Length: 104
Image (tube, rainbow, N blue to C red):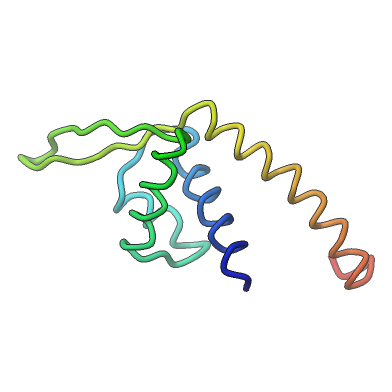
């Protein structure tokens, strides 16, 4: 798979995980696990990039005497998911054309 495409899919996947409720790194990995495996290093790189582009915010909370970062989606993050939905509709249409109407 194209590296840039995979990166974009992972970013939107992370945003989708935290769309309905804030979450933290380990929980995000577990929530994505049924769909795709993602390493901690990959996840934290994505989270940092999403924070830098204002698609999510971070709040640090003490949990069991340790600090845990909770990630919250922003309006820009929600807009990114909607943008992806439109892009995906176009991709499905193109795939139907390339592969054949009945394949998808």
